[in-house]
Amino acid sequence: MLKNRFLFLALLFVCSLNVFALDSEKLFEEGNQFYNNQKYVEADSVYSTIDTAGFYSSELYFNLGNTNYKLGNIAKTIYNYERALKLAPGNEDVIHNLKIANELLSDKNTINASKRIDDLIYTSIKSTTNFWAIFSISLFILGSLFILVFFIVKTTKQKKLSFYLGMAFYIFGIITIYLASLQYNKQTSIEYGIIYKPFVELKTEPSTNSNVAFVLHEGTKVKVLNQNSDWYEISFNNGQIAWIEKTKLEVF
Image 1 (spheres, rainbow, N blue to C red):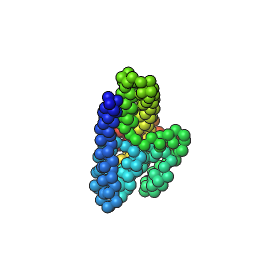
Image 2 (tube, helix red, strand yellow):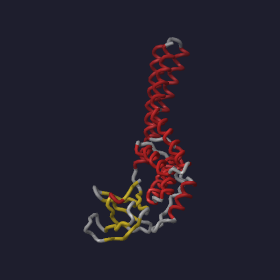
Image 3 (cartoon, rainbow, N blue to C red):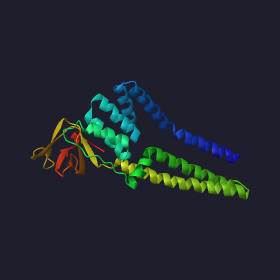
């Protein structure tokens, strides 16, 4: 009887932790309905709300890219397709749409179509870092409850069952912590950026008074090499290196 109460409380706790994820899923479906009804401004607002709240997925970024393409926001289109591709490397739908969007650019972008083993791992981890962190906490709590049951029950069979279940939850908890760290590192690493201004004069040094190295246009993708408090050092397709003010670049 006591064991059943522990199980009930544990399941109740785990279910309560999933409320926020369910809310984001409802919002995502609402955004999809707006998009399907060609209400692109409303769809963009809903998708952006999910994004701002810290929930992310390749599907969310892909839909944001599609929505901004319909709205004619080329820089945001490229930016969100690239973010989708970062979480799901080799995704054919994202690559196809990104190629179409790139045709509208003055400065053509390269597309990462990699399908390395580590890329496939990142692609398979579709949930957010928050989800994996909450899930791992839930597993550790469940594991601890079963270990507590181990000390309470009397029979050998019950002790073995509760001990093995407790250890299994601990092991799965460790695995989910590893998945959370992978996803967090992938999501927070800054590798590239998209220019959001109609055109930008890139500088030879991180100073507004320095010489102009070259000019790039809206939607252009650059690789981030270095940064200081106000500037990013970037490189463009053919190896050109320059500095750009942080306010003029959206990084991912």
